Every structure is written in C-alpha cells, then in structure tokens.
Image 1: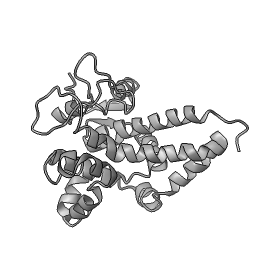
Image 2: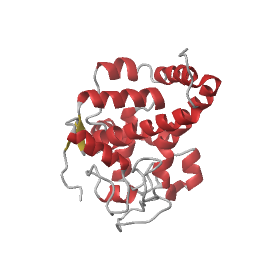
Image 3: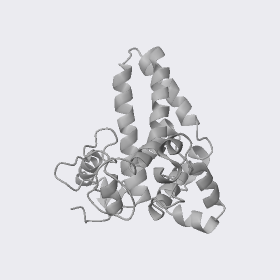
Image 4: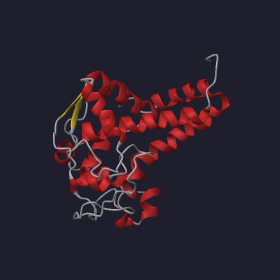
Length: 244
C-alpha cells in the first residue's frame, strides 16, 4: 500500500478522462481513421492504458467502427438507434451478432481490421490476457483510494462500456447538425467536456479522415488540442492536412 490516499472522485475524474483521451486520439482518430501517426512510445502508452482500464478488444473496436461508417444508419449498422430502438441498443446492442457475422466473412473482416497491431505484445499479452490489466487496475484503485477503490473500479468499468457503445449510439439520436449528410449523425454537444470532442459526431462523419472534429469557433475539441501539442512536440504527425 502507498503511504497516502487520494480523493476517489478526483482519481476517477482524471483516470476516465485519460481513458477517453487514449480512445479518442489513438484508437479512434489515429488507428481507426488514420488521420494521424503517433510516436511509437506514445502510441503504446495509450494502447496499454486502454488494455488496462477498459479491456477493449482493439481489433473488434476498429472493425465495428469502420463498419459503422460504411453502413451508417442502415439496417446492419451496429451503432444506429433507429433500427432496434435507443434503449435496446444501449442495453443489448447488436455488436456481438455483428462481430460474428463479420468473422464469418474473413476477407471483409481482414479488410476492416487492416493496420491493427499484431506484434508480440498484442498476441501474447493483450489478446491472451484481456482481463489481466483490468484486474491490476482494481489493485491500483484500492491502493490509491482505500476501500473506495472498489467503487472507482466499477466506475472505470461503466465508463469503458459507455465509451465503447453508448456515446456512438447517442450521437445518432439527439443534437444538432452542421452537415446534412445521408445518415442521421448529430453533434450532441458543442463542448467536448465529457468525451473530449467525440461529441462532435456529425462533424466527424462529414470528414472522417480529419483529426479535428470541431468546425465552428464555439465548438470545443480537447483531443484536437492534445494532438496539436503532440505535433508541436514532434510526437505526432498529421496524415490529412485539411482541418479547417
């Protein structure tokens, strides 16, 4: 045990925002849409964090999200609330059945998962022991927050599930639209406070290859601020320069 404890709410706030940052910058904008390239060390730090704090299957996440963009709000879209109903999508969803369907089509699954890490760490640690990191985080939470650490760990679990499913679903249900696209994507908040710019989903669907999600001067995209800092520090390189 460490010789001090920190406020569990402060630690939960900091850790969930770091989780969201890793998901937004690396998993979503860099790996899935290839809008930027990260320094290998920074990339692996974010990859490790997501394994530990969310137990996310990176390959499945990328495949599902790319499939979502190719079938946005069509009957087979795994994230659209307009097919199965909002509540059913949030609670049950169709992601598991969609994954089974895609895995039954090896060529399509391989195409959608192109570029996903397949190195020694991925095969022998992250894929082989997907829950090990999350169990270690329980020990970390209790070491930092005492008995409250269990509740913090449950908070991590809930936040990981929401980041994996809930936010994408809500971003096709409520909000405003800057672009009249063929799908029903929305910006459900102009201020990226909770999920660091991922709220700007309609903007993202308009140009998925852009690392910047904000379009209006009053829209806030904290993940883009982090990306700009990383570029300035030469820890990232933009692959698509059109970010107006």
